[in-house]
Length: 342
Image 1 (cartoon, rainbow, N blue to C red):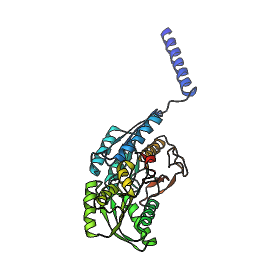
Image 2 (image 1 turned 45 degrees about the vertical axis):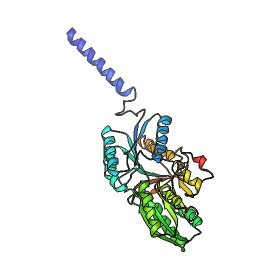
Image 3 (image 1 turned 180 degrees about the vertical axis):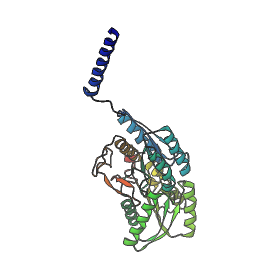
Image 4 (image 1 turned 90 degrees about the horizontal axis):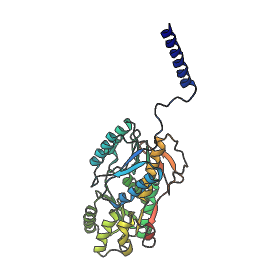
């Protein structure tokens, strides 16, 4: 009987303790909120100054927020190599991926695979991303407006007449082609005395652009203007122009940065470099990832805490993917290039 009484008492005590745990405090959650997250940023190539600058923004984000964030990319711009890096990040189980695709369609299956694995995916320079292949695409500005602004600057320097050519890093680079296509449409609507010769692929390689443009000078000796899209395009063409002694005859306007185009801006072989600060874009891309993994709402007019992204616009891109647009373009010439020393 004593043994039975002891058993009953112990059973009663156990029941009381269980009831106290169940009702007297907050039940533990299935998964506690993490103190920090891991974000991998994938770029076209780590060989470009543009993306070395972007890496500064990624690392600054990590320092400011206490999360682990880093940048990776192939030694040469290559979509297949980017896809392999994304596959590796999926295998690592990162919380988020920011991808700057060399070719948007080529990268989308890997991005979709990451999303299916529960990883948040944000892209940059991928405005034609398809719905379901990315959570958000982040752009420094509305791409068509940027292309139109480049054309305004080029047309002004050409006296609104004469032949011009365009270069893109890749014919599958969605952002570059949106800039150039909108520029041509704007030219045709506003500058009828200008003549578009054609669009050429630099393959993100200055030597390719340099040799193509030298051949163009032979075929079209009356060229008066050139629009570049990859950061090295205006440098390559400006070099060919300077060697031919045509600085005063041919106007060069396009996307670049001071570390690439600075010397040619000084000589006038390149008239104007436009673009955005890649560091701000890298920071903004990761800031969006952080909001996504924390379940925070991203809303129209929100300030992401990054220069040029203080009042964002949100709308779907041309192929349905949600897109975030800032107002972050900059213009660099010989007079202000020291203000953009990167």
